[in-house]
Length: 236
Ligand code: ADP
Ligand code: MG
Image (cartoon, rainbow, N blue to C red; front, side, top):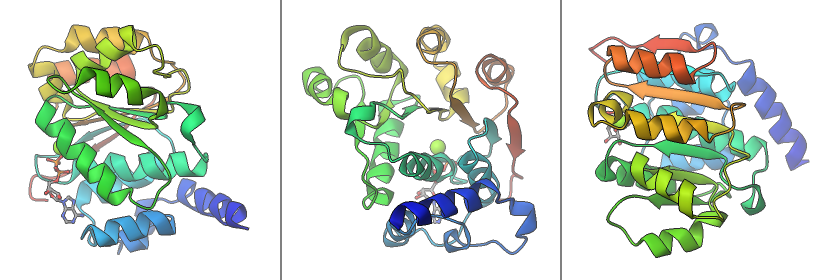
């Protein structure tokens, strides 16, 4: 029964177009699981921002996206909500390995994203992990084989890919470049290329950025397949 309901919800979400819903203003207007709705509500997320309104339906369909919106416009939820929903549709569990990988430019941003993920995903049965430089590497390594959604900084992610045998990425469904402009500004292009060369090509890739620099466009060309382009106005 629960399985059929989930299937229906997935179909509804995959056919959902925000243009057909001009008055969409709240998360509760979206076809989301009860677990997701409860997590968002309890975290105080009620009204939806412009980038979330446009990007979430696209990401829920499994399409690649380049989402540009200024700092503070709410890009984090634009990818976290679809990640949790899509892995729930797939009944992802511990044995399936990493289903989603989120690459952040800095430790601070990775921690923030991880904390939001834990909060809104409280009722979803998925595990989350954080890998950042300066933290206890051994602790990360021991847990990494049981993580479904992994958040981290480029160098540390690559280090685990090279050294942690239990890290299972061959099932990866979704890859996120969060704050892609900053990732590239910080000189992580080579690290990103190495990570990309080891990931399965059949996946959804979501690239979010505050600005659309040339290097962001180059990364988009390299990593996205038939992406949708979303750019919200400055006065969000
Ligand atoms: P960005 O990545 O675009 O810079 P964030 O995702 O970090 O933006 O969000 C900026 C701030 O806005 C955060 O404090 C976040 O909690 C808050 N926020 C995001 N979306 C919503 C929302 N729908 N309702 C209320 N606050 C939100
Ligand atoms: Mg952000």
